[in-house]
Length: 483
Image (tube, rainbow, N blue to C red):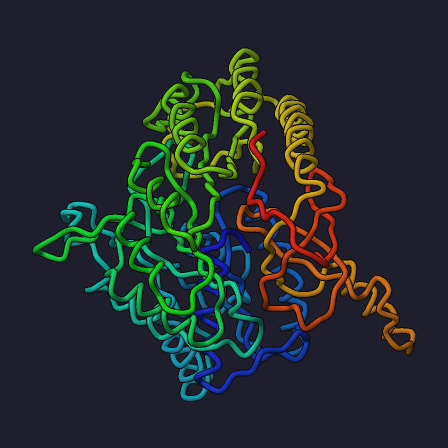
């Protein structure tokens, strides 16, 4: 559950478990070990965990030897609550201790085998030190670094599009955000480790790599004689032989420098896509959030990005109904969407998180029905903008990295197989992939295209998806239109 960082963490943990002899299963009832990788960014995410734990608990009642673990941000933030509300949980592990999972499993099994008793194994990282200078907060001295650099090809899934972590933690302390408390202080990985990991992934079949960080553009690694910053890191990863696409998420507006835009302009395999959360279009709200930039600075950054990187595609994040948000401040957010004209926006209703500055010092005073209305207004406006953005691509050709079958194709195949029918390849030949600028494209084509770069002519568009056909002849390739 949760962000791209959790997707990567889950892949790394699965690799550890497979090395121990475990095999993945899709059947909960047959599992010997169940791990839930959790998110704490919003209350809804935590509610989903407790709902899922209820289902797991019922399965464990029939299979008492099953080991159940909760890992990730929720385990770090509320391990006491989890132990109280979910007594069938055997293992709790924070995101900074995932390398300890094999030892935790061994601890539990030893206690059962030798003492015949239950135990809860914990590995949490509550001793984060923010007093250390940034140059010393590197993962070179952090044992969890070994988890990232031990990447292998997963037993399940594909490495076609792979994530590589460049940093852990966050030092921004936005008043609404729990991440600095669950993932600890900002620590950048050694650039040589990152490049080597990218090289290994490409050798294993990756065509596209996305560099991950809580504030990825804040990356800075002090090697003693010199400091490597994010633009240079992009250039070094870009040169990995065989890599065809490079992306990065998520950036922080206050730390974004022009050398990164120059890299996006000059490095041909670096995709023209920028995800830059704004959170609000009101300076007053941004100040209450402690975002450390103004709306004017944010807009000016996007204007520079469009000027320096032709065809760049822009995405953003917004929170509606933050503490004290007035109708005028909400209107300012709508105005920002209209001005920037994002490709797409991720938007959320404010959810007060325990331990944050907003929870301690502010009042969550916006009624739920008002939050829902404001969320709907943002969603409606962005739907119109996204539709116009996509319709401008109709008739043009785009480069698509073909990921696999579309959801509709998978449903069609499963439906026909369940009825004992052979696949008809009418809807079930529908493939999907993404453009360089992160538009989703669906089209009919041969399965031999999966994992390849294909030229697709766009024939129709919705606010969420482009529809197309494999181009039969040459056509001008575009990344994204200027809207």
